[in-house]
Image 1: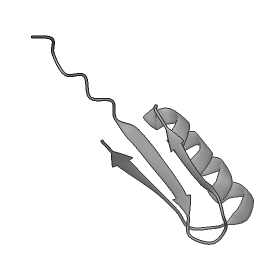
Image 2 (image 1 turned 90 degrees about the vertical axis):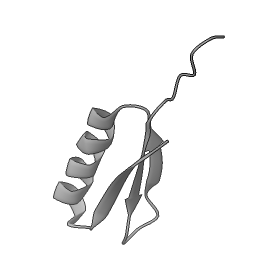
Image 3 (image 1 turned 45 degrees about the horizontal axis):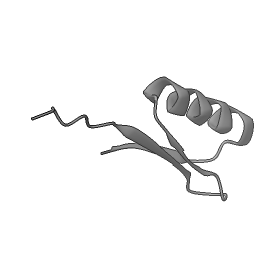
Image 4 (image 1 turned 30 degrees about the horizontal axis):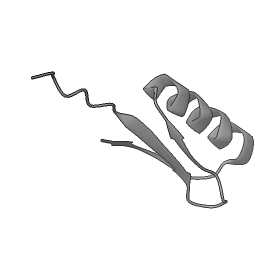
Length: 50
């Protein structure tokens, strides 16, 4: 029986504009989060999903 590989994904959503993306790497999601907040001042949420 082969092991089950779970891939974590990260859901990024801006609460003030249509920005919404999925990322496979947490550092990528964090970088876009930081850049978007710095550029716009918007509130952005990043959540880990299975």
